[in-house]
Image 1 (cartoon, rainbow, N blue to C red):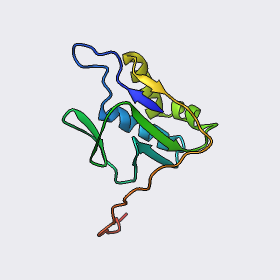
Image 2: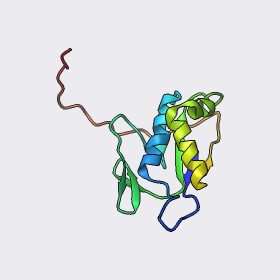
Image 3: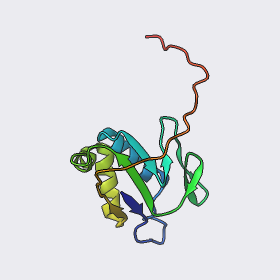
Image 4: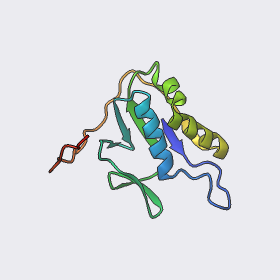
Amino acid sequence: MQIADGKATPDGDGAVIDKDLQRVVNGLWQAGAEAIAINGQRLSPTSAIRHAGSAITVNYTSLSQPYVIDAIGDPDTLPSRFAQTTSGAAWLAVQRHFNMRFDFTTSEALRLPATDMVKLRSAKARKG
């Protein structure tokens, strides 16, 4: 899937922001994606998608447009299941309203880069 800014407005609306990418990623996880990467940055449970200056960062790496989101999942059901999630429906509404570029394509084979998992240093069981 590719995502890019829509038509620019004087007040800055129409630009893809970090929350848009977070929304898309959350919708993909909810739809059954098994692994996700944005512009080659593999996501893990500790990944951060943030706005930093004029860029969006993933895993503290600045990204540029278009944002290419690769997701491993069932190519026959992932697109429709994504659209049925709350996050997917919200993203699609934003995309249509601001005329953002959004291309969803499927493939029979996809390889994603490995991720550097942060090692858990300490944890405590939560009571009750």
